[in-house]
Amino acid sequence: MSNLLSLSSTQLKRAAAIKDQIEDLNRELAGLLGSTAAAAKPAKASKKGGMSAAGRARVAAAQRARWAKIKAAKPADKAPAKKKFTMSAAAKAKIGAAAKARWAKIKAAKKA
View 1 (cartoon, rainbow, N blue to C red):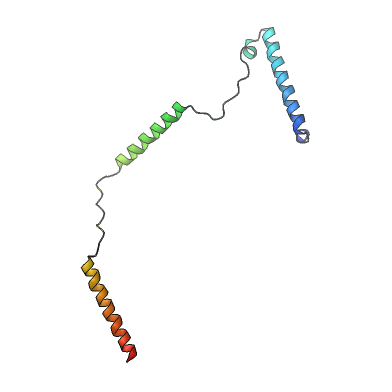
View 2: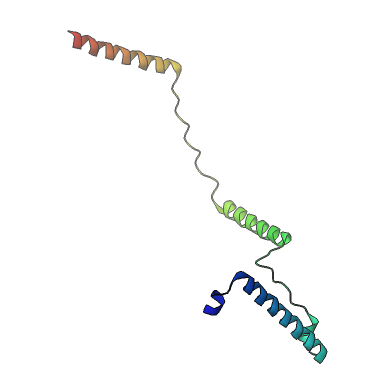
């Protein structure tokens, strides 16, 4: 293993090319000798974790169905949210006037 680590990139590429040639010759030899298992099929590059578009669509549809089932199972009869309290303009004006009167009274007491 340490021998592989000391090789340069060009040496590694050359070693890979030689290995491919050896595999090709072995397949050719197997074909000549009548071994159909190795000669019939050339080496197929494996697909890494691939999924077809149709497969992804099926998985997505199944997941959407699962979520729909979960959402349908939840009780829909929740109590409606409380209405947010809003103050009328007249009430705001009345509170503002009272606050101004309070501060005027405090300021008048400080001056006296």
